[in-house]
Length: 350
Ligand SMILES: C[S@@+](CC[C@H](N)C(=O)[O-])C[C@H]1O[C@@H](n2cnc3c(N)ncnc32)[C@H](O)[C@@H]1O
Image 1: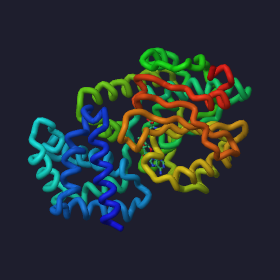
Image 2 (image 1 turned 180 degrees about the horizontal axis):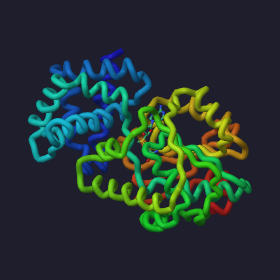
Image 3 (image 1 turned 135 degrees about the vertical axis):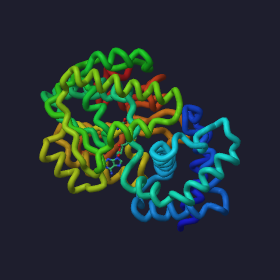
């Protein structure tokens, strides 16, 4: 069981090494992790994985790999600086032995961190699509008040950004829609809340979740700028700890707050298909009508660039594949699919 799972993890790392965005910061780490995973001298990694998989049995390979990189980075930043394992200028053999040694000596500390925290990377441009789709949905179904919950919200960026036209105007021009974007509409927001797994991620943790590169520095600047803009706009956003694996707790939260729109972006790839099915069942069964669940997830478990966008209506677990985005950081192209018309009205897909 352990060796089959570890073999699958090794294959997932190899796949991620070919990711077009690997050069943006995590490639050097993924490359040496692949070597450690394939080696016979990986007792530190084996102990770490055994402990992680016991405490988080549902964690996906893509999440294990990205979270391990973040936890190692966090550990090194706290103790000794950036570290060899992230330096692409060093030979692979040197990076690999640095990682083997670190996992041997400090694997237990790194494992504990991975058991408590998740990859909480958040993207400042991701709200562009929900802004337009939820606006069109509210208009199409004449929803007088949108009561929105953002699941796996990280630091609550999307709930703060919605309806902030200044932030929308800055980022929207870098996203091209085919055949066309729904028009910008202000969403009639009545209640906005974000939840994440306890302990709630901090801004510092989110900074560590950004890869060590200029590219990710720029993305983090966009996060900081967005937070500053929404502070100016005085947006009142509630952030609460809630574990989405707790289906009864999630259903109760939705009904107690009469939530009619749920967004869940870049969260479910951290789990297997069974968790996704259960979440869709729980949310669509508890949404106020007319209700919408919007899911955005990386294409192919982080092995390729891009993301897929699915929508569900209250009471139905049938996935509507409404769009694909060429880049999970939302710079590039959105391809709108016919199902968009079901959610956003026939004029949204012509
Ligand atoms: C990669 S971040 C995405 C953040 C944000 N939605 C975005 O797209 O920018 C995934 C978030 O999901 C959260 N998450 C993972 N598992 C969760 C769970 N069981 N319950 C609640 N939140 C969870 C993580 O803690 C993390 O902050």
